[in-house]
Length: 366
Image 1 (spheres, rainbow, N blue to C red):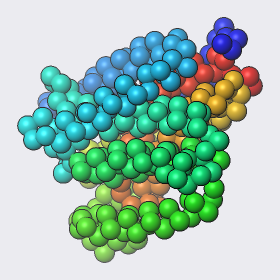
Image 2: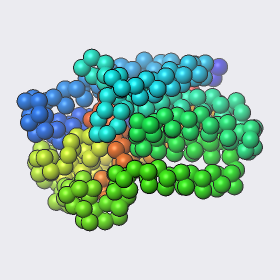
Image 3: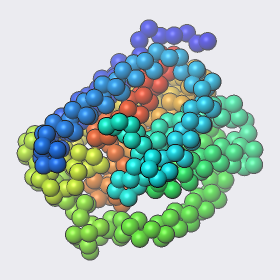
Image 4: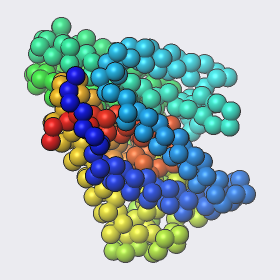
């Protein structure tokens, strides 16, 4: 058992709490008009996000005090539970459909999104697998394919909802973890070709996905349809300028940008707080990722290293995709911005993941 530090990474905590605080303020600012119109309660989304944040922070501090190697023992039960939930959510009458995806299970007045928790469960399970079988990872048959097999089964279940965004984050995270474990580039090249063909098939099989691709390339081809969100997002970012229009002064949140408190919250933040505000958020994410990388490099064992890498890569991929979508650099995927976007499952999951990372930091040599 490695020697335990007295305190977790303080800079990581500060960066995360700063992002969370900015997120709470921006969820209120972005959602106030929509909440008043739909629920006659200006604070409807802000109150729920504050509740999710409270639950998530409690979970984070509890998990921060659970020695991280215990997750190795619980990896199988956790991933089995998540697989069961992915099957349950597909059952009509149990799974709730939103925006064309059956991705939520209602629990009283709230709902959970099993695919979000599968991301962390897969990171834990894959960290256990890779730490125990790293010497086989250069073998296609005994290392790479077994490690990817379960990942693709989970991806297939997520796509049945369908939820391409969450599935993409999970696949991307797992591939980076396997690559860092020492898998051969030649094996990845062959699988990449298969993946590209499969991705093209997924896009071609659903007209709305094809529209998202074409609208990303030229949103003004269909300004009132598939290109609407990207155009409105750019209309928010552009007028923000250097210092922004001022907190609460967004124009696009007045029913121009649909549900601005979720995937496109960075556009409202850029409109109200300008280039300075957007840069501050990116800096805080960079600070969080830097501390996470240091924790991963200093972890006392392979399981801790892979676990920290998986969590950091998951956050990094979501940040890059979300900001890429909002700024018109990527197709619309429906991925939230960690710690900032409205959403109970996503926020709780991210805070739990940071709790695991903070516990690893208590043993990390850096």
